[in-house]
Length: 99
Image (cartoon, rainbow, N blue to C red; front, side, top):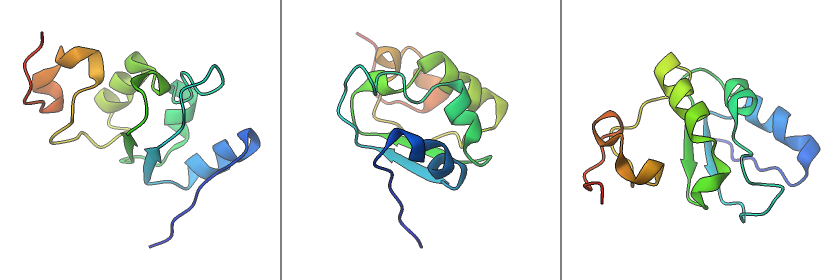
């Protein structure tokens, strides 16, 4: 198993093209908000997974849902629920109820 990371904006696209599992640990800034949007998600290999342990605003929610629905991304069996306060709890296997 090989672990890779990127440290500069110009390295992101080549990194995503080779990444089966991406773990986002970025701080939330103007530059990183929405960094995982349609084009970046589409660069990843089909069946890839995204783990966002940073702030939820790194991921453009609609684009992630589209990627999941299209089969581009692996559908999680369980998620910790940052996605729209669990409004899609059945789709994402969330166990927490919406407020």
